[in-house]
Image 1 (cartoon, helix red, strand yellow):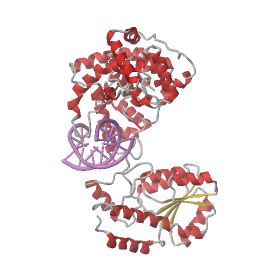
Image 2 (cartoon, chains in turn purple, red, yellow):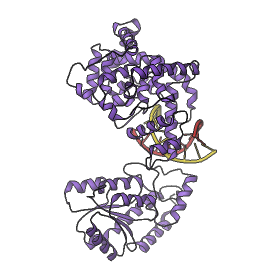
Image 3 (cartoon, protein in one colour):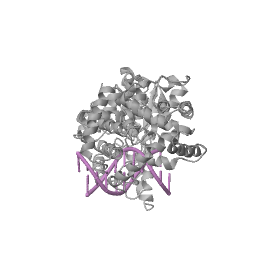
Image 4 (cartoon, helix red, strand yellow):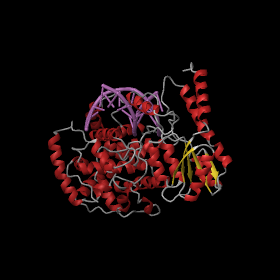
Length: 502
DNA sequence: GTCATAATAT
DNA sequence: GATATTATGA
């Protein structure tokens, strides 16, 4: 690594001298035909090789296609289909290319926005030849910094550079794939448009699409390629899906381990339950879960982050209700996006007329609020917790993932883990009762292996959730104390007839 | 297509 | 440092 010094540097310099500024390949994007023409003339005048495009989407397509290699992108800020900032952002995400913004607007904010989004320069229109003469420097300096960053690495012969601003590429150990991409790169000395292997962030939207696809296919027939097809999302690969699917399955296994009891029997009875449930709770089943909150963490499939995402006021609303001996339904209120409606009111409307679910629920809660010894003891613990003891040990029961550092065999843990989880459900619930938990500890409540996970699995279509009546949501959520209910909820995803409404 | 595990992010 | 998430390779 350190052995590189002179030689490579010299080569870089040579390359730079050979190629810049002449022949710099510039992709210019502007929806204004006249501006574009002027720009083209100027660029040619500067001995660059301009390619002119009138809209950002086309530009992006060209860049993604990679047929032509570009060294730099010049883009207008204001464009109808996709503005320059968006284009800038996407380029930053997917490839390493210097982007220069063009605008008639010399507003400081706009400039800052451009720079913050990763633009390497911001030029005012009309652009002058002198300014264009210098743009090659951005390419050169970027190239240098790339080379330097490569010098710090062993034998890493590809052209990838720093992580992008919005997504980081992993560019360390790459094996067979690496060869492929470096071969591609050899087609041209300009590697600028090489795509980064971005790390996919599974946002709620993405996950919803994923679930939607699974629902369409049926969990038993599901396969990465099919999902990929149905999801129809650019930039996603089969591998991305496979990885996510793997995680999803692990999750399902964890919350509904087949190791407990007779799997087929369980399945059948749950299916019956499911039908009943679907009949009575046609809406709840899909709405229980999703909060429509953009980022799911730490337990994506469990609803863990839902409370984690709550604002302070929402959290305190939870606490308030709980502390006052409220029923479960109350503290669940904040799970819904509709909580804001209640933020200022004492009692959200709660209806509990959902037959079996509510009976179960009421049973559960009457027991728990009337103070059995078990509950009392747990409450005691709770109070300790709320006095500052970290409940993280409890949390681990809920957030426990079978994969530590990838080395453990997930399936081995499942049986025992989930059993523990099940046992912990009550304590989890109790915890929530009395303490003024921090959001973090609160989070532990939701992913109960029972309905909690059902809630987690169900993250579908936030819009639906948003429209949902709080009472519906509550009824759905309230289902989770019951194991049976839990099963049937889980079966919404497992059964073939799990169809998402809407 | 699935799984185990490595790499990376939090 | 532990854990979660995602990528990768078999």
